[in-house]
Length: 266
View 1 (tube, helix red, strand yellow):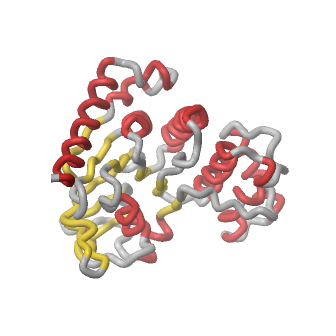
View 2: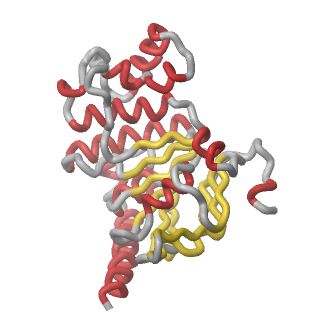
């Protein structure tokens, strides 16, 4: 069945034959990717391989030149934009608003009154480990705390799909580990279809159900791996990432990426 003919009740993300160019530069070529409803897929690959471009195409912020994309059955750019909430590397919090008002932006834009929106946002912040910080402004929060607020804002958009573009890139190792654990737990609880871009193989294997490794430019899906962490989701992160299966998968992915980098150098 052609993607455009799928019933609107279908969920998940489906990409078929996607190609994209920026002028003379071929960024993506022949991308076929399925993210099952309620599951998380991570994209990793060499720098410049088109990971963020793919995310923007899925979310409808740049037009599709060749191929097809469906998000929850929506194939138009406008429909995909309505079906996705995007979380970029930068938290992009508004400095004049406190944490609750920042998290509640999508609710307010949807017509929810401020009192109700703040109450809902405060509950979400509490769930993400920010109890007592609803009235704090961005300059009063650490980088990890700001990313928790940004994640709450993304979740409260209420979309079927989440697009996370290296959300921990600017954080130190301790904060990254804490947020990986928190985000993974929430994504499992929510059952939200998620596409995660990261340069960190360990992060990809820990947070995602499946990892897609992109080749050097033009980006193609060179390999897909099922994460061994799926079986260890109830374990603390430190134990999950030290299991023999996880370590073997991480080494395999790193070797695959190393091979791609070597091919590029050659």
